[in-house]
Image (cartoon, rainbow, N blue to C red; front, side, top):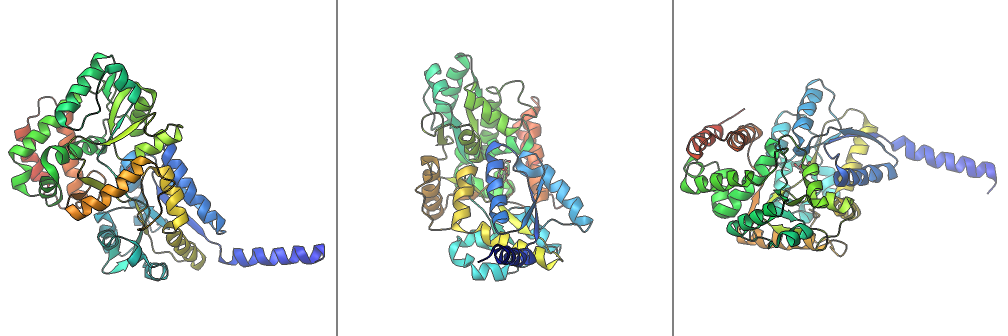
Length: 415
Ligand code: GAL
């Protein structure tokens, strides 16, 4: 082939790709070390298909700021192609009529047989797929620094009594026992973990999923609140407002011994070059080894007008569920693939435990949705309940009795 014809052929090929190339604007809040690495895997996947990636990152763990920004964009008729939206909020957005039907992609890629049914159902509105899932995060973890434990002569706890014994020892050794960030989603991440550990999965479901008033105001809830508040004594005075990844950094550096956080924290440890089992430990939070709080990240797809962008959006949805993407993304994010039957050879022990426990707790009925991470209840009630719990955490005069009354009232919040 002559140089000119090669050039023409290349131009032709490029033209063919470009004719289909579109732009995907993707809203997410993955801006910490591990999160950003995972997000860039998605960007690279889309770019390899010839599409343009328009990053719409809104910083803020847990996504509260991202959701506020999203609302104003959609209201002004300028929705992104995809946005990180999870749980019941997917249904809330779908009801507004702004989400696109992804059934063609889902059918071509066999999503119905590749996803656990309960998760697939949450991604559908009136039987049609409107969102694509990327992972399963386990929330009820306790992250530990083995060096700090050694220094304190403490044992990694499996019960709440052991937890407070270890926390006392860490404190005595001059360390911060619990790294915490005082933001309401982080307060609630700890709270729901305590609720699961102290009350068990049945109590958790009744109180925090079905919002049963008799469970929200009960001796068990009182014990949950008291245990939760006791943890505050083991946090430091700079906790208020601290970002979760900075709390994780305290455990990474050995300034703190433990952190309650979902396994996106593992993404931070890994991004810092730390090795699980050696430099840090992952253990189910006290009393929760046989239960599992899940948090599935997913992207809701918004209706678009431009056909090239629609094609790019469909490619995004298909790519998200591909084995290659599920592997590389989750290795960085700290989570496990949501796609069933994937090989986990490249994953570490924390991920393998998570995958095994996901299956066993699902069979045992102790797999529960995370309310802190938007998986369990409508967003209005979730927000109101979170506020009550954070007020209790922050106000040393607040009593469990008054807080339980407030929880019952908050659970009734409609919108
Ligand atoms: C969660 C989200 C995770 C992680 C975390 C901290 O709600 O599901 O993917 O990003 O917030 O930002």
